[in-house]
Image (tube, rainbow, N blue to C red; front, side, top):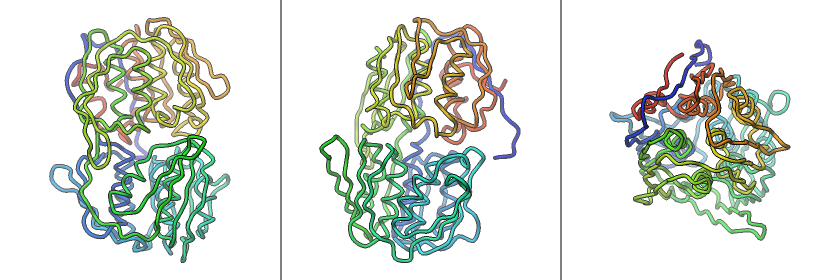
Length: 447
């Protein structure tokens, strides 16, 4: 994937409203974790709805390299035959995690608890992303790490022969760091304790429980959470049904809000309360989003969303909500650029270390399209006029799938078409994005 030519894409106003009912691909966070826990469980794990994006397929390949059996069946169901806690084998070669920060950080946690040697690498974007945030807590459990300057990949890991239980307070709101420490704690005797000052997505805790681990979550006085995991559990393979990804659903949802006369239904979307910040924010802006058929699947809340075009008004998004919508700020900023009034998104420091410096990429892209936007400290401020910006720009996506998709959505409503320099990385999280959008009536294609 790294060496292919770029894939310029263009988006323009469609001939009419967007309509239809679709299911976006499976949740990326849950897909990674289902493969990993399946590999650490005894017996068979059957995964329905796994996201077959590049990022998740890297995780599947890594689990195979560590001795688990991962098989794709007819129709896209995956079966995993695991090795049990502590039973992974040393990989014969380097593990390439592609573009996926989640895969790299969670896998570092798993490897830290196993007495083996492994090397993690990734593509140019992933090799720039900070790994010190997992190296530090995992070193305290007895694992040894060798990395490039600044704790960057490639990263060599010598897992702990006798891992120690964790007692760690996460300094940044990061589900990946929390999960890495919990996954390492699986291999240690006794109880591992992880404290997070701001609650982040809890898919790891929910799924660990589903596979048979004992996980206790307490609320701390300051609104954070304390997670207690009993180490060396017997995890048992189980069926996992992966909900549709709320981060991916955000793109057709916002397109339906912005293109006049549209109404789109998104089926089976995961609405984990620690992931649903975008939908809360859009509702505050005046979005017409109907939530129907709310249900529980594999310990996660799932529902169907019907989104109809609505005039939006600017809002103030509090920093306390940032962790629950960290991946949705690019598409929220696009919605804000078409709203009336000012939207201020607060506390976005974490966006500087995503697939790209996502904060700078959003601001420069919107400005190039004619929107009034500024970065004030860690806040992103978008001044909407009630009408879409003019468009007409080519956006530098910097190997970032969410920047690419966000600006292709914006191009549905700008006066002039919007181009992105490279849409290849969309496949890391949302394979078939352009086709799905075209099926709803959007005008998106190769430039």
